[in-house]
Structures are given as structure tokens and as C-alpha cells.
Image (cartoon, rainbow, N blue to C red; front, side, top):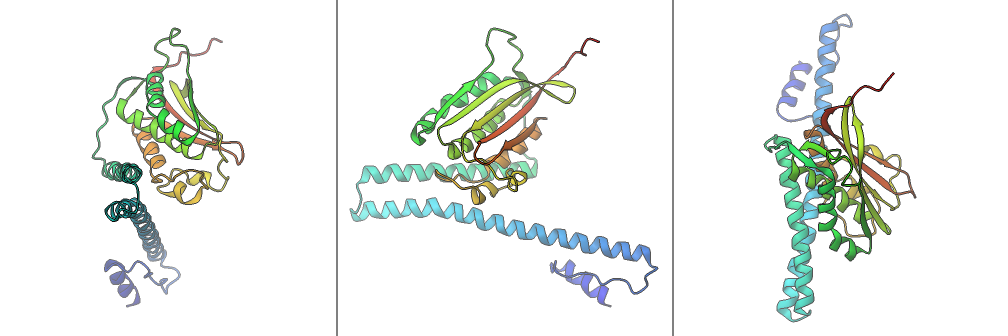
Amino acid sequence: VQAAQATHRIADGDLSARLPAPPDRHADELAELTRSVNAMAEALERSRGLEQQFLLSVSHDLRTPLTSIRGYAEAIQDGAVEPLRASETILDQSRRLQRLVQDLLDLARLDARSFSLRAEPVDVRSTAVAVVESLQAEAVATGVRLGAVLPPSGAGADTTIVQADQDRLAQVVANLVENALRFAREQVRVEVAESVLGAAVAVELSVHDDGDGIAAEDLPHVFERLYVAKHRPERKEAGSGLGLAIARDLTRAMGGEITVDSQPGTGTRFSVVLPTRVSRPPSPP
């Protein structure tokens, strides 16, 4: 009877309910089924808790720019603030809100696998240059030097070519650079070099910052949604906390790997490795 009641409670959405242990210790199959059902209920309960935490965090991040926009708009109406200065803040907060909404849409598409990738030859070197140039104004505004270290364009012209979606790769790089700009003290550096992914020749793009670094206990969680925004100390304005999760999911979808290396006080290095789809010839004996 207790087992039936617990089963009905779980089915009705009460994920805190658990099946009681079977009275017969020799009922191995029933005991295993009970453990499986209870484990599933615990996993669902944790998932629901994380979902609620995610929604609360996103709601807070949405309200913050909206409150600022509304406050400055009302201040303009009341004549309490200089309109030009207020309009700059409104535009800045509007862009922040737009980025957050776009991040949420991207995550929804990734979760639903409703996004599409167009694999084509993409020059990682050119992508890095384009992203660095597009974010120079943001780097200047935050007082950080942003530069790139690239292989020579003349030698081995195809060594930085990968099979990827050009727009999505640019999005990954931009997310990593924007994250680095928020934590850097003085400098962010983007590097492109040849690498290996499994048995394939690959290209590695890495983004370095000279910030405070990430504590060892935080490293396994940096690609979790909203984790960085809530746990890492920041010197500059917070982002949505979703950019690294999107970068990880997009990199994996393009057949690549993304890693992070950091120690407190020494800065942080994020690396994206994508295969060129060309097998490396065996080494000579």
C-alpha cells in the first residue's frame, strides 16, 4: 500500500516521495526497481531545483536593466537628469537586455536542437582578427589592451582552416573574448595555433586574460549556466552568465572541444580546438 501511494505521489508531481524498501530482503528484482525509481525521483527533484534557480537568476538579470531603463526614462520626464547622459545609459542597458534575450534564445534552440549548422571551410585566423577588431571599442572603454597572436599568413595558408559554421564560430570567439574583458586587469590576448584533436590535425584558438583567475573548486563549473556571473568576483559590469555555456554547446556541436585552465592570481586561458578534417600523417620511424 505504501509503495502504491508513493508511486501515485511521484506521478502527481510530488518528487520528494520515495518508495519504501521491500519487506522481503530476498526480493532482489523488487529492491533494484525500488532503488531505480527512488534514484529517478531524486534526479528529477534536483533538476527541478536547478530549473527554478535558473529562472530566478534570469528574472533578476532581466529586471536589472529594465529597472535602469525605466528609472532614467522617468528622470528625463521629470527633468532630473541631463537627457543626453540618460539616453546613453538607456542605450547601454538596452543592449545588455538584448544580449541576454539573444543568449536565452540561443540556449533554447540548443536545448531543442532546433538550430542548424552549416559546415564549410572557415579560416580561424580571419575569424579571430574580425572578432578582435569588432570588440576593440569595448576593450578601450574598459581600459584593457586587446590583441591577437597569429601564425604568419604567408606560410601554410591552409593550416588555420577548419570545417565549421562561420557565424557560430565567431559567436564562440566573441563570447570568450567578452568574458575575458570583464575579468582582465590590463590585457586580453587571442592566439591561434596548430593543434591535434584525437587523430586529426586541428586548430586551437585560445583566449587569455590577466585577471584574478578561477579557484580550483570553481573550475569544473565555469561552463554551467549563470555560474560564472554568480560566483566569480568581478571588476566590471556583469554579463548574462550564459556566454560560456553557449560557447561550450556550440563548440561541441561543431565537433570540437573547449577547455579552461586557470589558477588564482595568474589569469585564465580558454581554449577551443576544432578539427581540420585532415588526418595527420604518421611520424617517421
